Image (cartoon, rainbow, N blue to C red; front, side, top):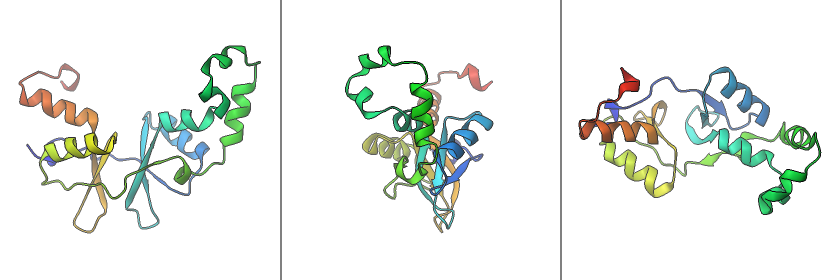
Length: 156
């Protein structure tokens, strides 16, 4: 089974110079939880997802002691979000560290790379390194189900 059998071709990208607000807006408008981050040559360098945005928006003292969140006055979350509104995607993204695959690679390579690097998304690139799609952990899960003959009713 190859990557091309489970590739997602409709990819939503964002510049690494975009802001928290822009990433959030794109995610909301496209009903997605993740974006591939591209450099100025439109080559994949990372990804940002809704978890990245949550992590960026929570004040450090609440990460250290979650129970304090129960006692925060109204408006604290709004102030925290406003504080990170213009933070750059490059400072929040999950760096891919050059991890990428090609359409004719085996799907097990995507699984191995996702596992080894703890990545949610693996970009699929052409011979010149340009993004042509992605494989997510969900896509790998569906490939595993297919190999075991488990019907995916959600895909029907």
